[in-house]
Length: 197
Ligand SMILES: Nc1nc2c(c(=O)[nH]1)N[C@H]1C(S)=C(S)[C@@H](COP(=O)(O)O)O[C@H]1N2
Ligand SMILES: [Mo]
View (cartoon, rainbow, N blue to C red):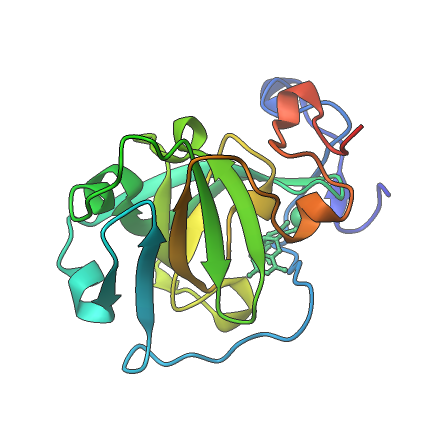
């Protein structure tokens, strides 16, 4: 679909657009189901499974070092948006707050609203991954996952859980919502890991 909202990659950014993707200048909203409305007062974030169980509040998150991130965003439905500007907290900084069992090789991301998506520890615990609470200098709108979402730039955006409210650490891989419904367990855009075999 190349038209009003989509443009062909220019030569310059062409090498940043994974195969089978089109650039969009807008910022489409891709949500399965209703948009949860969660205030920062009631917001909680839980850790469980192969980790010491603990619950964090909004102020616990805001107390962590805050950074600006610029990242490209690739949806498996074939749109990509380059240079999204986010503000948030590094996954690696958050991980310093929790005690995870050495046997935990996988993580299930849990969200308000019930969405889940799975990721390996190798793909999750990276300097470039972050929890975002602002986009383009504004508080993250509810439709884009506010108050807080995960962003995992190197995988398709369905791994970037909106309204994330928990991490479940696992020894063996389990499948999240889209992964149980035919999508790839990992979802690396450059390898076009779109669907499970
Ligand atoms: N909780 C939750 N997170 C989600 C989704 C969802 O439906 N629910 N959709 C995913 C998909 S398929 C994409 S492409 C991105 C879209 O993010 P956006 O709506 O901010 O563009 O969020 C991902 N995270
Ligand atoms: Mo998506």
